[in-house]
Image (cartoon, rainbow, N blue to C red; front, top):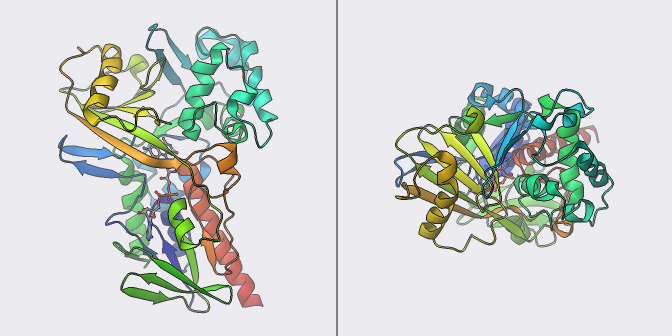
Length: 424
Ligand SMILES: Cc1cc2nc3c(=O)[nH]c(=O)nc-3n(C[C@H](O)[C@H](O)[C@H](O)COP(=O)(O)OP(=O)(O)OC[C@H]3O[C@@H](n4cnc5c(N)ncnc54)[C@H](O)[C@@H]3O)c2cc1C
């Protein structure tokens, strides 16, 4: 009976295993770490004495693969939907506040309402969206929009950093367009932000591990794949240090590992090589704080801090595309970011509250045109081996939706390949 060996228990591997186990396949998941979730997980932090996420994450209403995944794992209730959609912002230097609040339907009539668009912009400024739609594969966001315009620092740059984890001067215009098309141009519902109020693992990891166990899938933690043996164009053995696992004739392998690991396991496989960091500062306050408009998150412009997220007594700052800051000592970062956000929260600049800095140096691939061109397809030259991960060629940015979508695609490819092999 077919067994599928899924290597990597990040969201891509979990999504793949979930789909396959629901389809009745026998599945074994191998994970190098002692826990699942990869770059998207919660853990207990000794410094703050509470559970935090490795980094604040947000998903959007348009993320259909993620919504199906949550439904399959029975964890839809573990996410909070903000309706109607609105993205509040504060410009730190000027103190100006605004909300981007898309309206219903695909025609953006909402841009005619000044309370729904970026402060200091007019509806005509947004025609740039259609310039993005015509971007060539080698063009960056700033090649397609006006760098001197008001929208650049207040819309395109925050959007490029949040969605592509890449500065607008380098980020792929085509990839950002894929997100704009699926969200802003589909109307308010597709733009709704979804939050993980009880943490990432409570929604995206723990319920999936339980469902996998219920479906009879096996999960082996602390199993780091070292070598894939390939014979006659097929993967025939997986070596995990001292142990090795035979890949039988009708077995399949899905590699759902990061791109650098895939590159070392399969040197002939093309993969992006440049990554981009994300920095998170989690502060523990004495009591909960209220953000403008009573929202659980806030976009910031004109500062190093880019987003604020609140959960109970904690407030977290996100800095994406954080190359400029990532090598600075944690204490400096805690002070620098607190000095920027304290006035917004109505807190004094000193003392700096207890803080945990988390540096994810390889948070995602750098989503530049050159790196995007190196994304490989799901199927490989090895007949029984597929790839999954946010860095593979999903046509989507490297996000929760991209990773879950890639896992679902790999599962579908395995099932199709198995059906084809059986028919033959
Ligand atoms: C700080 C931060 C903030 C983010 N914010 C957002 C956001 O707001 N919205 C959003 O949509 N996305 C966000 N993302 C991106 C999102 O987290 C990723 O796209 C997603 O988690 C990637 O999942 P993956 O399964 O593709 O990869 P990974 O999570 O990297 O999973 C790969 C797994 O393979 C394992 N592995 C590695 N080598 C081996 C080996 N040799 N053998 C066995 N196992 C191995 C790893 O331990 C890991 O568990 C953010 C990412 C970070 C880091």
